[in-house]
Structure formats: structure tokens, C-alpha cells
Image 1 (cartoon, rainbow, N blue to C red):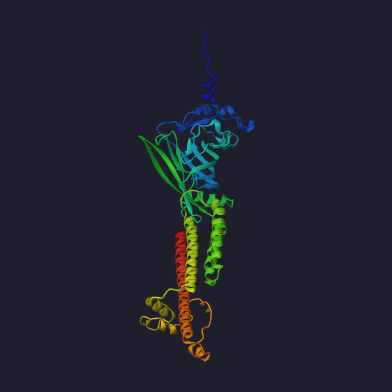
Image 2 (image 1 turned 180 degrees about the horizontal axis):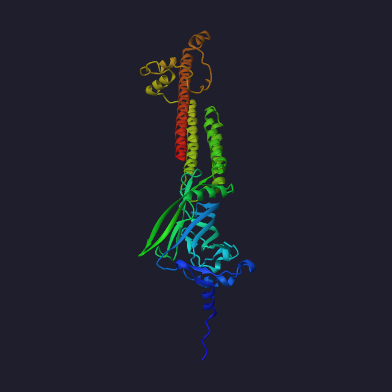
Amino acid sequence: GHTPCPSPDTLLTGSLLSAGRGNTFTINCSGFDRYGVDPAAFQAVFNRKAFRPVINHSIPTLVNISFTMSAIVEVDAQLQLMTSFLWLNLIWYNPFIRWNPEECGGIRKISIAAENLWLPDIFIEEFMDVDQTATGLMAYINSEGLIKYDKPMRVVSICNLDIFYFPFDEQNCTLTFSSFIYTVENMVLGMEKKVQEISDTSRNLIRSKGEWVLLNIHQRMVKMTVGTNQYDQIIFYVAIRRRPRLYVINLLVPSGFLVAIDALSFYLPAESENRAPFKMTLLLGYNVFLLMMNDLLPATGTPLISVYFALCLSLMVVSLLETIFITYLLHLATTQPPPMPWWLHSLLLYWANPRTCCPTAPQKGNKTLGSTPTHLPGVKEPVELVGKVSGPREAELNGCPESTRAQQEDEAQRQHLVDLWVQFSHMMDTLLFRLYLLFMAISITTVIVLWNT
């Protein structure tokens, strides 16, 4: 009988992948210097790509991870997603790929199609899209069996965004690298380089002047337990900050200008019929501004800037209500002025001259009001009296009867009461204006302090 012939795979494994010292294997690479790399020399390694490349299966494979963030494309506050570009670097050791450079024409490093090799199933847990990495990538292998695999990725990762401090917000997104299949008994993860080097390289590489700035990258090693299995994980914390200039110019500055103009409109005369329509026009313009700028605001959550806009709108509404109240007081004072209570008259005198003691209750007919000045310090000028009333001596010289003199005295007292109510209206206008400024200053200062913290 004839001796059975060995299979080609057995011949290839025996001739090109021979056992060496220390449980390692050496590839027979004779002829590399004359005809380039012989693909038959690696065929035995390619045939084993479905299995984890280890000699002793009780020893886990160490995979070192590193990445470089080259761009932060978009951060979607509504969907809570961050889109970025990464260059993922994986390094591990394959004991079956080893050759002697002196016997292989001095070749110490070659590139091999990654599809021919065993690749670790490293994935990003926060990944929320289909992996669109290009096929046909290459891996570099040195003569010691160290494999370096670089993979460009467009990563759409979920990120828990806190938009309260928008547009001066800083976000901390995580990228968790782990294995989907291999537990810690089969694969452990390590760092190829220090995380500070990863952070510095990423900041220097990002050339795009987009909306977001990379601040820093931190790292932490953890183990995730699922049932009785443990998986090695590396969590990278990516700190990013928004560039607020666009939102300051388009949102905060116009809003501040409109509120400032509304505050300055208090210096229009209270008797003027233009103050209320002017404030109503400002209020309408502010609502149109909010409608136009609505697309720039986050669609979810309640950021501090929305509270600021609501506060500014409330201030303008309060300002309009104050103008309506003062206009009503002036109209009431000039048409049908009611009798002024003594405590209100005392308060008016105290406001006019706080150094003097408050007088007693006015006598009947308010005859003691004659000493009240026609202008109160700290308030706007009162309206001019409608007409000058002639005194009693002038009436007697003109031969007016007694009834005419009494009528003139009543008219003088009524005009004086009108003057007091007008002065009270101006006093209330000044007081409410100062309260308006105080509340506006406190509110805006509180918002700025919250933004700075």
C-alpha cells in the first residue's frame, strides 16, 4: 500500500510556523529580501484568526487602548448626543507572529490587512449609531509579534447634558471602552499612553473653531459585573465647554438693550401721553425678539437664560403697569381730587423735608396745606397750575362781591389739593422707579452670579 500524503495545511504549518524557544513560534521568512513578503509564510496565522492568539488559554490577552479626538462635530441637547471623530488605537501581542529580522532581509515591521487577523471586540458602550468605519484597514506588526491597529471612527455617543447654565455650560461626557464577549479571564484592558498625553494631543489636533472646546480628558479603570461574569472597562471622561460668544451677541446683548431702554423710559414726563405707548411698543418688540431667537435656545430643559428672559419680560410688564397706575393717579388728581388723609399729607411733607417733624392732622378745609412747597426734592417737577388765583385784596379792589371771594377761595383750595395729589403721584412714580431699579439690579446680579458658578 501507499503511504497517505499529508495535507497542504499540515505541510505549511510544519515548514513555515515552527516551534521555537520559550513556547514561541518563529515564521520562516526566507526570501523576504528578494521577493518581498511571502504571503504563504503567514497563511497559518491567517487560518487561526477565529481564535484568540494565545499559547496558554488560561492567560488573558492584554489589549492596550488609546485614542485621539480630532473633532467635536455637534452636541445635540434635545437628543442628548455628542458627535465626535476619534482615531482609536489598539495594541496587543500575537505570539504566533514572530520572525528573525536578520534572516528576513532586515524587515522589522510590516503591514497586513486587518481582515486577516484576530481583532479584539472593543466597543464604546455609549455608542448610539451604526459603526460606519471603512473596510480594508491595515494593521502594523513588528518582528516581536506586537500588533498595532488604528481605526478612525465617527462616534455618536449618548451624553447626559446639563443645560441649566446655557450658554456658559460645561459638559462631561463619557466614553466607556469594553469587550462584548471576553471576560477578565480572557481579556484585560490597559493604557497605551498616559491620559494626559491623550488629552494634550487631542487639544492640539482639534483645529475646527466650532461651538465646543475640549477642556480635558480623564480616565478610570473599572470592572463591570454581569451575573457571574466580570468585564474589564476603561472610562474616559471628556470635558467640553461651549463657546458663548454667538449667544451673548444674539441673545443677551439685545435683551439687555431693550430692558435698559425700558428703564430709561421712566424719565419721560409722567404727564406725557407717550410713555405708556412707548412701553407697550417695547414690550411688543421684546416678544417678537423672543420668537425670532427661539431656535437658538435648547428645546429641552429649563436653562437659566430662559429664566433671565422671563424675568426681563416680567420687568417690562411691571413697568407698564406702573405707568398705567401713575397715569390713573394723575387723571384722578386733575379731574376729581378726593380729600387727602392727614397721614398721607404728613408723609408727603416728610418726603418733602424729612428734617421737620410731622405736623398734626390738617384742619378742616386743609387750610394748613398752604405751607406745602410746590416742588418735592427727589421727584419730578409737578404740573403747572392751570390758572393763577387772585388773592382776596385784589378781589376787593376790583369790587367783587362776597360770594365771588368765597368762590375764589374754594377754587384756590381745590387747585392746591390738585397740586398735592400731583406731587403725590410724582412721589409714587419716583418710589416705584427706584424699587424697579433695585429689583432689576438684584435679579440680574443673581443670574450673573449663578452663571459664574
